[in-house]
Image: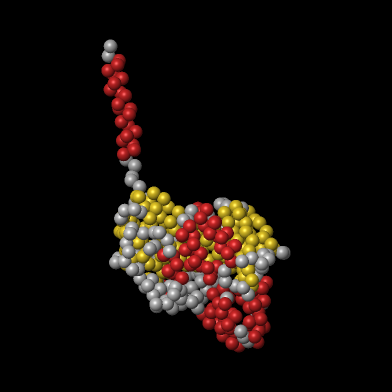
Length: 376
């Protein structure tokens, strides 16, 4: 009769084994993290991203934002302007985490709140970041308006780092990598080529000519697709709804999607032609690795790519402005003017208009300069 007793000994040992394995799993933080940002590029006639004056633009950031000195970035190429990634943190109870962002093919140029940079600004760290839900003290402000503040209009918790407080982590940078979308003029429209292995969930071809707008969309873009030039009979509400719906499908909360559109409303929809598309998550993780410790229970990263295109209308506007010395019109395209002129035969126009020629030299000289004055 010894067998039953042997079974009794073996049975609890079998049960105990999985309990030991479960207990060894690292705990997951109760924090949810959502991130959005943009990668802006300029396409040449073959659809490839080209160098451009990615830091030459009017100052749109508050003066309290930290930034790199101009000499440190003087010779850095600018294929991509990584604009306004922000990270939101949600939790019901106070928590402390550490955040690391790597940018192996780029450099971090601006950030807030206080952080430490590493590897020649190819990485940035917020260590011992305090998340304080329900915090109601005033956040830093400026006298003049800035696009920066629109990102605060969410339900995210306040975060604290180095004595500085905000509703999100903020950073920007310059990149030198290829984006997955190549827009190429093809007869009656623009052929979009997806050069990556992941599908582009949403791509919108948008054009604005003197306030008249039009757009066409593509979903699940793989390989290539021809989008006819949009009829200029759309309204802004339609394209905004299309983009907000796409951002929410990608993982953003409604208020986050609204905040992103509010931040970039004047820039994404300015005069000219561009492709606005959702960057595949796998691509974002590869070019911009992101780590939170302890690991959050949920992490969403939604990035929008923006590729500027030299359309027939834009080319005509620039050529007329060059011939007449109309620097006011040229200023509309200032940070994209350098790569656009490289695609155009502008030699005669430059010689005929000394004032325009001087303006082009100024823009070119600022190709590797830092961004404009900050907002007080």
